[in-house]
Image (cartoon, rainbow, N blue to C red):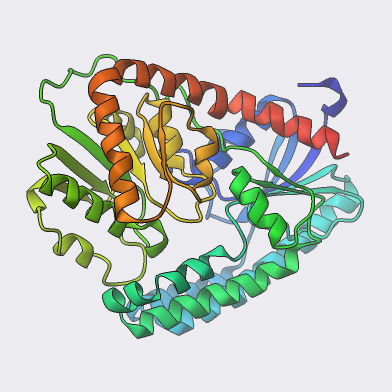
Length: 412
């Protein structure tokens, strides 16, 4: 680490989970590397909500739990209601979050008055700390309002599968979220998004000083599995890995794979992911014409993902408006090529041995999958090596944090 940024005191807020398949695992790696580089971190979190055990041995890590017993008792009662309390659950979520953040800000201000911070770092959300004279950084998980546009685009599909009520609920939820996020333009001195696509989208939303950095991946955990037995069949196996919501466009992938099967392509699709919201989307699987060619599971232990990757040929992520696809990065780390769309920001990092489909249509995706099939048949080992090399260059925690430090230095 550059000596000019040693002994930096950070007030930090983030959702962390070492073995999560989401951005929470990347946040874990970010905090760990910053600690190893000598930064002093005060980590603020709701008491009992985050597992910080791995960091407690660091002398430069200080866990500051926020206790809200009265709020938690209300949460416990709402959990007993049907569907997690419905509208009451949603309203209390907004109210309790506001109370929690106000208390957190008050405690952080008191700590700052006694021993000033040099940096505020909020991972996954817009900054909410109000500390004068402190450099504030928001490492955002995605854009501020693009979800609404996708929900409008897919209105007919959502209503067909989930009903008008579900569509209205989604629309209202993301309108409220977008309204809340419009207040963040001046909340930070530096904004970071997961890709150039996110950077441009955030700038169009009115944010200034936005930069793009990939999220780090544990490249020692996610790597080609050399000892796994080699397959002897000639079937091309595609993988979907991640939650299933309208924006992720599982419908496109299912329709494209069905067309390939109808043209006698020897392909198989494994789908691993839960139906997160928009009740009714599981009908996409129920209606699939070739059920023997798909395998579905609602989830997988993250530690088992590298072995899963060794059994497939291509990961496909058909998401629209995607900030950064963790499963795409994990596949590349394991030497598996990927297919993504034009508004998937992860395309910045996939290299020349993976593919981008030009339009969010079944035919465009199908054609790209056909190109991938032919390439895998003739150059699989070379493609795998190239994917791993790209991943080591882009997703190494050390390299990502070095770029973050440079951004911080440049913006002081």
